[in-house]
Length: 218
Image 1 (spheres, rainbow, N blue to C red):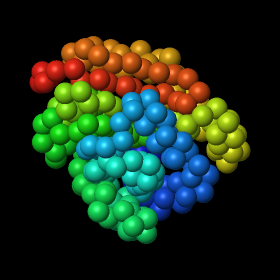
Image 2: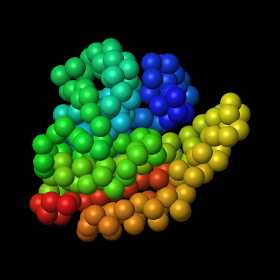
Image 3: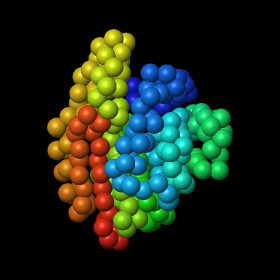
């Protein structure tokens, strides 16, 4: 089994849930706050792609009035997310969707906001994935897709602990949050004809912000 697949099996899902509730726990409310502050929207339809144990979905729901669909292809992640959502008393706000970013089981022009933290680096075909994301994004909708820790302080403290646990993590993270990846995703978005986007690489992380300005299908 490949290393990527192991991250999403039963053991991998349990490990991700544990880290999201311990070392990574402080980042999700900050990322949710960053999203809301950047776009100034707090209601509508939101999709969290690669939602894992549901930490970002839960943080967003607590700070907004979004109706959220948490999409993940891993049944093990989704089982954990269901429990976490119930424990947070958010069953009426967050719906689990079993699905793959390369073939999203959601209708066209659905989402006001599409978010994703961490999963984009594991997508097998980013061109197909972003075509699907653009398809389901409403005119006027926004994306906040990438990776990061919310702010510099959390980035530095969490990175130090991750490197202490696994020295190889430093290089893995460097490749993900890098200028090379900025250029890679710029090429993808240009190729599929996304007309309005911004890729930020700063203290809050690496984030791809798409603004859909029309109903053009790509």
